[in-house]
Length: 96
Image 1: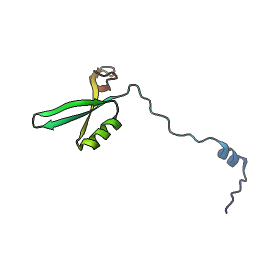
Image 2: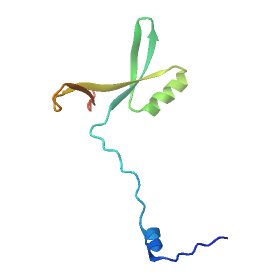
Image 3: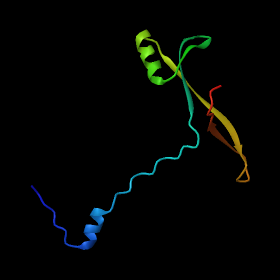
Image 4: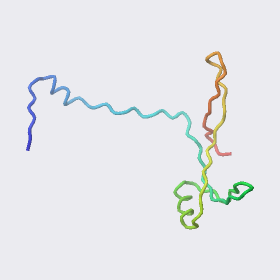
């Protein structure tokens, strides 16, 4: 068993001071992600059944031994605040 000896009051203060963790990331808008079962062929992908969560889509994918598809919704927005045009992508927060 090892023991530590504190000799200076400053060391004691450092030990009692709460540690600072990472600050949580600010989320202005959540990305809307939708989950589907579907079929893919040479013509494209046909989305057939939508699921409320990715877990539901994963379970159905496992049962059917077929891939599931995810779709994220984004919108392009022009930002003119810096004196030039910058195109930003922003998440679409509602399902369409």
